Length: 400
Image 1 (cartoon, rainbow, N blue to C red):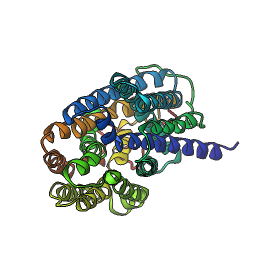
Image 2 (image 1 turned 45 degrees about the horizontal axis):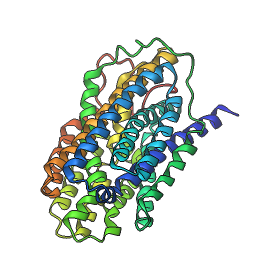
Image 3 (image 1 turned 135 degrees about the horizontal axis):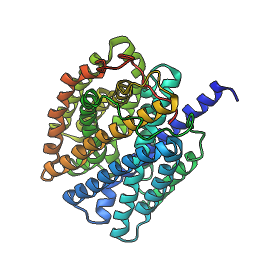
Image 4 (image 1 turned 90 degrees about the vertical axis):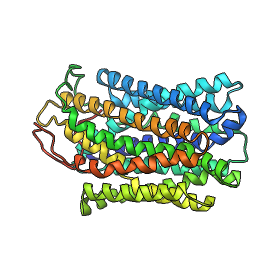
């Protein structure tokens, strides 16, 4: 098999992992109203469960960073896929509430491992291709989410136990030809010289994105269910149009960034996102709220992939041994992924706590905070101090 063919197979496998992650996550979140009814869970209790899951996902990401340097990101991604397969089955068929909570915990750990390792694989492949391709990987996540939301709409009348069938997908993808490590495992101190200060600014932008993204995907269906007279079979429409709009923009993201530049794309997206959330907050009817969620997906779609590309670029490492460079970038991506969970914490927990009386108030929080992307946009293209390669639009790194 040629190198080009092997690289294409690895790219397809990594995209399948992103798609699987989106499929499973959205399949679960769109059925949250059913789980809250089954276990008589209030919004505050659900916020605490989501907090537990976010914290365990953060722990899973740290675990992935540590073990990926000793093994590789491909092996850790396979392990994470197997873990979420177990988690989703336990969540779906749990006979008692304690088993449901345990399933959420298992899923949280696996989610963290997959979050880190899929982006390690994506950044490594982006470097191999020598051009930006991260938006398309995140577009695959969105396509998976669309499939998950569609599945939830199609199976809304079926017993919750049927959700366990989703576990077949991560089990299958775990055997895909992911990108292997290049060279032997390096010294674990290889990533010590990373310039973290500029990475923190980009990370703050990712926090703002995931705050909005998680609030929408976690609380959107409940918002439609609790605030409006929305037919129960249609509450997944809080998520599905959002994901469709996000997927379209992500697939077009490479061209938009090349034509208009990172800063313009991010700033326009932030303004569109704030307007969209205002539509959601002040919506008089559920179709208007769905329109707001759709516009929101279009506005903020490319923030996450541009964040990971910027972090990998700032990590530097040009001219280093491939294995050392790999360890450096993998460490950066795994630690940078923690901003994902800080944003998820704000989106899932803060939105639920602030909106415990009314989710309109809960969605008003990200409506204001998302405007923080306006001043942060410049950090996505600023050259890293002391970097030998300067600003580049694509990520760096070898195989995870």
